[in-house]
Length: 173
Image (cartoon, rainbow, N blue to C red; front, top):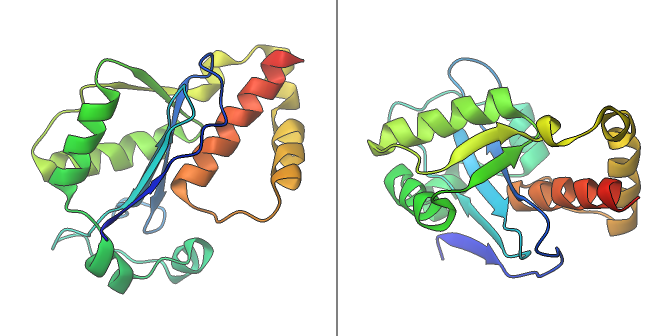
């Protein structure tokens, strides 16, 4: 099995699509190792990304945090072109939100450049959806939801779900 697909339906349709990317580390040479998103209807998708030949940066602390090894990426990851194609198919025409826009934008560009493709969706900063009051409460509410959900993997679709649920709770008061 090369892709992990999760089919939870927890979010009502009013939630935006939220994307998260896990990477080989931070810095100029880092690259995406896992991409996950949660759609407005709650459908979640997550896949590992097989490193391209010239993607060599590897941070052992990032690997320990995500519990993803290069060997696992080689065995179960999808090629950059396949991941980019799946993202474009599912997210075409949408505005997709992320909490780590600067990093995720860069890693998404690395992925699509390796695939020789252009994203057919727009990536925006989740912060742009928040009022000042919501932004001030963001970390508190996110921690509450994380605690309520119990131990979760630090993985892309789990993180995207947490972000989407946090936004929903802030909006519902």
